[in-house]
Length: 516
Image 1: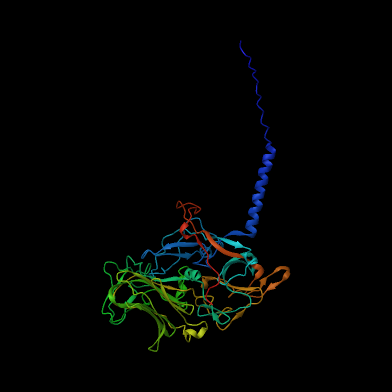
Image 2: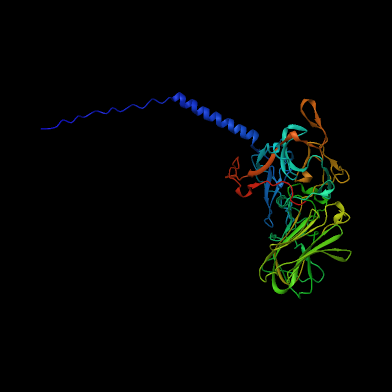
């Protein structure tokens, strides 16, 4: 007998119909929310800006020519000025244009100007907004602010003076309340500018034509032996110097500015016509690697400022010394004992004279001497005396990667050969009042900043601010990061440079120095 099995039919429930109208409304709600959040973020937290001019070069660059010296291969940039090509301000031509006359900041070569090239866009940066609502601006910050003369336009400069401070620019340095203001290490590293790099040797040193020349002469090695010095250029590698002499005999190389680039406040980014009128810059750094190949000897460098030469050296016994030489009198300033140099092991050597501070580095060791913070602490200022750079040594040595750099030098004249003096210049100190700030461009000879503003700032409701200051309420934010340096075009005729220049993405440093 068969059993009956009751089979029940299962009914499948139909899925509810989607409410398309609700979905569309929800999508719009999210889009509106995202838009509001983006707007709030842009308005109050962070915003992107483009650098239009070269007043902050080389820290931040506006539209520029991206150049490489055709003799030594050194890379540098030159500012593009639309008005010189009969173009409206802040415009970039689509095609290639011929650059003006420029000079290599290392070997001093003036390349021919017959080749047209594309214009690179200005840096694009991220600015942290409203930070100054919670924290006080720090000296050396790079800030964005509303131009007091035209508040609808944003400017970007470096902050050097804050409320209540008295500023004076003396021989290119910033003095606050009569004391020199030292830059933080990261800011200082950004501001070193090349004078000569021995690693970049011209490939055609005999070229001396008028168009494309070394200032009308043939190229020569700018480091010269003094008197009976025995330094020799390595025949197989001209970027190296060698010495093989008794340990007790000092041999000296001097940088000859009649052959190499001068020690003036020149900017490769700017017009070369003003170079001869720029002031001397005596805040310098010399750098090289020293490889001792003998048991006895010493290696050192010398930088002069005004009428004093400062020598720094280390010997094979491990004595590290800084001394001053004036009127043939030698005075020891600082000394310390370190581990003796290792034979056949290159060591980094740096000697710096910057912001009235001498810093001597050998390998990981540093010796520092403070010259003092007052204007006269480095001796009577003789700004018409050209500084000197020397390298000296004894024994058996090899030098490589030799280079000279100069510090930023805030100029006292609006134009290279001009006589007009601005505010906060030596002899004309400038005191800031409550909620007043003072800003300068890193490209000092080519910056329209607080030194030169000749009109009162415009405020709301018919109010005006006094000349030469940035009011607190016009501060927009702090420059934080270069997120899109001038990129590269995928094709020569491409309109946009869409390939990112990743290697030049960088933070923008500022802030107060840790030095008291």
